[in-house]
Length: 204
Image (cartoon, rainbow, N blue to C red):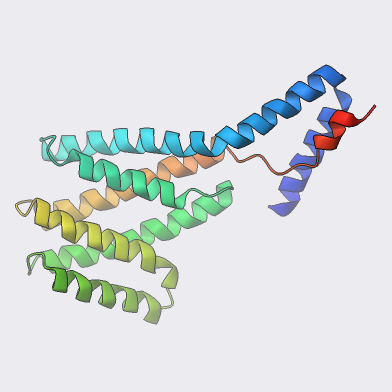
């Protein structure tokens, strides 16, 4: 990855040097502007797309708009958390988040099949599921497992009539939506690498 970024950087420098001075300055200013606005645009796209898709999904499954903001919020949070500067890093973070979320979804389904939501129960289950991840050498799954489990249990207190399998499945799908959107954004809207091109403006 470092070699690839180095190739991109040298190519950008070469392209900049070969351009006429006017185009050279405009090109560098455009890149600096994009580097300033780019991160905000990336997160905004994740929020827009994740929220919209998850909102539609939750509305379609539950047939009521009352609970859709919760699912849309969860997808947006997940996508924002896993987005990284590079595509490969985003994919790696998304993979851990989804697999950890799967562990949390299964645990949440089992718990809600026998017990209602309680703060004590949520605390104990988070300790158990994170400890399980640590013991099985899957510590990278811990954040996603704990987060999704907490969201599933808390949502059950908001809508206790919702079946545990539907609750757990929806939260996992919403997490997958956020991660998928983050991967797409990282792939097609990458962060521009740092380039020592500013001195080119002053070259003869």
